[in-house]
Amino acid sequence: NAGVTQTPKFQVLKTGQSMTLQCAQDMNHEYMSWYRQDPGMGLRLIHYSVGAGITDQGEVPNGYNVSRSTTEDFPLRLLSAAPSQTSVYFCASSYSRQGAKSSYGYTFGSGTRLTVV
Amino acid sequence: AQRVTQPEKLLSVFKGAPVELKCNYSYSGSPELFWYVQYSRQRLQLLLRHISRESIKGFTADLNKGETSFHLKKPFAQEEDSAMYYCALSGGSNYKLTFGKGTLLTVNP
Image 1 (cartoon, each protein chain N blue to C red):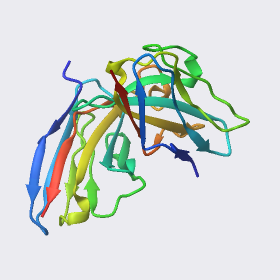
Image 2 (image 1 turned 90 degrees about the horizontal axis):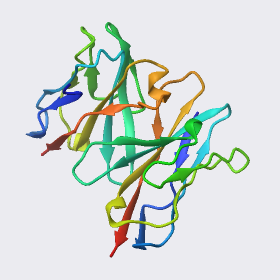
Image 3 (image 1 turned 135 degrees about the vertical axis):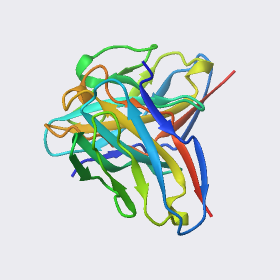
């Protein structure tokens, strides 16, 4: 199994550009989420989804959109990139609400390093 | 609201020395606590969770509800333990994880 796959690994955007960060999992996980990782800030939850067709906001949702049309995919869209969105983005998934707390925990992707200039 | 505090951004120890990474939390209900680890240029992975009371790679962590702490300990640090460590909390039926800001552990030879 590939686990959680994120693409691209690196991206440079100009201010105002839009783009989509891709996240796909092949474990039939119900729960998927996006975090951003910034120095000294830890990981902060952007958006999450508990199943196909269901999404909700996390701690820092502004400037980002998500959708969950299939169980496998959970793309993160930057509508108009800003320098403040320069960060490393991680997608994570879990097989269920309880799975997030189980010995399996979350499965993380390898991250997308985004720079907005 | 749920909050996780890791007071040390950086922690440096010598190989063979004991190590303790501190984690304090704030949550009004019964929390579930976790430690995640991120080795250099790798993805985050679950290290251990309080409910299992297990020891992974020589690390242990005990939930102290009185002190609202979940410190990570290892009696003899190894160089391969060098990594970023994140404490995380999940509150009750809420499956969302709230992470601390992380502690970068460096084990010197």
